[in-house]
Structures are given as structure tokens and as C-alpha cells.
Length: 474
Image 1 (cartoon, rainbow, N blue to C red):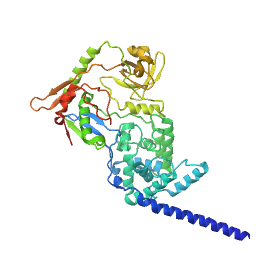
Image 2 (cartoon, rainbow, N blue to C red):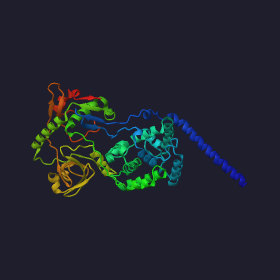
Image 3 (cartoon, rainbow, N blue to C red):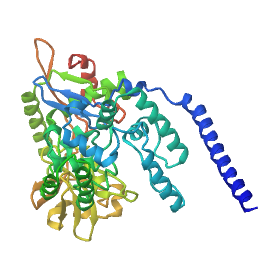
Image 4 (cartoon, one colour):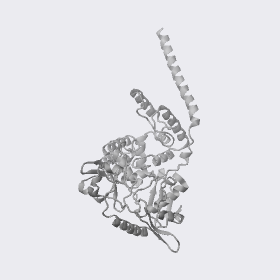
């Protein structure tokens, strides 16, 4: 009797296993033909920004949401490749797209937890997700991700997969890809990264905000230690190299693209023209536009116009904050503020800042460098009356307000750009080429991917007719 019961149970168990295998096989047969084509991966076209230059090669405009510089996989240093593999997928060169051991471990953990708490995504699966899938945590999405990873592994080499991953992955601070991240965090070429720097960057894909070494140095250090230990265990480095890297003091230097701020209006005219012709593609196809304006002429024209406008505006009362960003629903305020400030220019010494806190006679602001500064009543000056002054409506200074400062170190004061507008155009009489052009629109904000603004002033309408002589597309 007992033997019969055991035999029956074993039979039922085997039947359930075979039934499950059958269901999985049917799911694969139904889903696999419906997977997307891999043309996007096989003919990878990364989103590259629009760059506008003066006639002497200076950058006068840069437009695009993503900071990226495409780099071939062979040009990434071995230390960085090893660090990323150790951090994200230790069996990358062994599996067929899915790490079965890792999946089994994750399934057990999720069953115990009673839901999807962790995954076991390989680098290939992350490529599949980044290019084709959403980030939702469901078994259906993970199933499709696994099948797509297998398909990718059948079509691309391991190096090709790594190249896609290294150039596409988001790493915080608006940087995409490790080449851009090396510049953003350390202001150096990716090939010059040390072991300590490489492992710090390798920790970012898991959670760019949580492991941002500038914002969360302690958590970033924990992640770096984990990666260095993995590298030592895998024989990628020695224990001595690991210990040396752990002791290395890292120096972070935020990369700031040098842009000639005297020709922002010219760059904006070019941006509008390209947007009208190419739409959103203008910001992603890597266009390089060379204008006829001269850097020296622009500098002289801009200085003359600004000096005149300041003289007319001297003695005006404070008109209010330049703009406002809502910080009430932001998880990482410092990172969100840093990203927003990176879209604003410092013009004529007027530095953009975001208000973090307000008090009765002082405010705390964050500068583009990430530094926080407290401004007392003296530093507020003529803007003191605008702090939490509800009579000024949305123009009042409050948490999230964008204001302008001048100064350095601990000595800053609130300033504002002139309300008056003016314009100046300088032409080459022989060729008609524009050598200097300063317009009347607001010149303190980048328009990354905003829709073109209407032509509302006479000088813009005047020059729009010969804009095609102002630039050429290459």
C-alpha cells in the first residue's frame, strides 16, 4: 500500500514536471517568433547631441538630452571591462544570455519573499531591456527578456554585446556610457581610469543615483568594495591591487562643457532652423554646424550690448525668481537640482542657483558645482523682500526657485539680468556673412530639446531670411 502511494506521488510529480516543461516549450514557441528584430543592435546608432561651432572652431551651442561619446569596445581599458563584468555578470563569457545558476538563486529568494524582490539579469539581459523592454518587475517581462537575451547571444559576439552596453547604459548626471561618465565624474579620458576609478564607475549601473560617488560617497564605497572583492576572487586583480585601490583617495571633478556664451543667440537660431527641418532628430543625429560668426567679434558685440543694457537697468527693483522647479516629489533633490542646473548657463558672471530652503532673513541655495551656500539678508540685498512674499505670486523666492548670483567662495549676492532688450548685427560687407549677432531673446537658458520659440522681435525676423548663410551642415 505504502509503495503504491509513493509510486503514485512520484508519477504525479513527474507528470507535473512534464506538464510544466510542456507549458514553457509552448510559451517559447509562441513568443520567440514575435520577438523584435535586432536591427537596432546590429546597426547601432547612438543618440548624439547637436553641436554648433563658430568660424574659428569654438563650441557656441550644444543641444541634446543625453551626454554620450561613442567608443569602440577595444578602446575601453581592460580594467574597466573586468570591473563591469565582476560587478554585473561574473559568468558573462560562459552563459548563453541567461545565468541559470543566478536565476535559480533569485527564484528561491523571490519565493521565500512572496514576490519579485530580486533578479539575476546578465549584461545581455540588460542590453535587451535597455533597447526593447520596460523596467517593470513581472515574470512575463523577465521571460521575454530571457528569450531576447538568447536571441542576442545567437546574433552578436560577446564583444559586440559589451560595446552596446558600455555605450548605452545610463550612469547618472545625464551621462550615457562609460566614456561620458569618465568625463562627468573624473574629467578624464576613459582610457586613463585607474583601478579605483574604474570600479567606482562600474558600481553605477545597478543604481546610478544611489551609488553616485558625489552624492552618496558611503554607499558608493560599499559598492566599490564589493566589486574589488569580486575581481580578486575571479583572479582579475591581486589582493595587493585590491587593497591599494581601496585606499586610493579619489578626486571628483564635474565636467563642464566649455561653450562660448557670447554667441548663444546665434546657436539658438541654428537650433530653430535645424528643428524645423529635422524635428527631434536634430538633437540625436550628431549634427555639427559651423557658423560664420567670429569669436572675437561676438565677444566685443556682446560686451558692448550688455554694458548698455545694464546702464539703463541700473537702480531697478528686484523682479523675482527667474524660474521654478517643483522639488516636492523629487526623491533625490541634490541630483535633480544638479541635473537642472547643468542645463543653464552662467552668463556675464551671473551664476544660476536653486533655492533649497528659505528662512525669515536667509535662504540656502545649491550652485552648479553642487556646493550649498547660505545667503543672509546682506547677500539677498534688493531681493530680500521677495523671500516667501506671496504678493509676488510665482515670482517670489521659495524652495525650488531659480535665481542668479554673483561672487565666489562664501561671498555671493543676488543679481538679476536686465529687463530691457537690445540687438546688434555685424556683417561682412563684401560677402554678407554674419560676423557677430547678439539677439534680444533671453540668453541665460539652454533650450535642450524644447520646441522652437516664436520669432517675436524684429532682429530675429530680419536675420531669419539669411540664416542659411550663417551655417552649414556637415
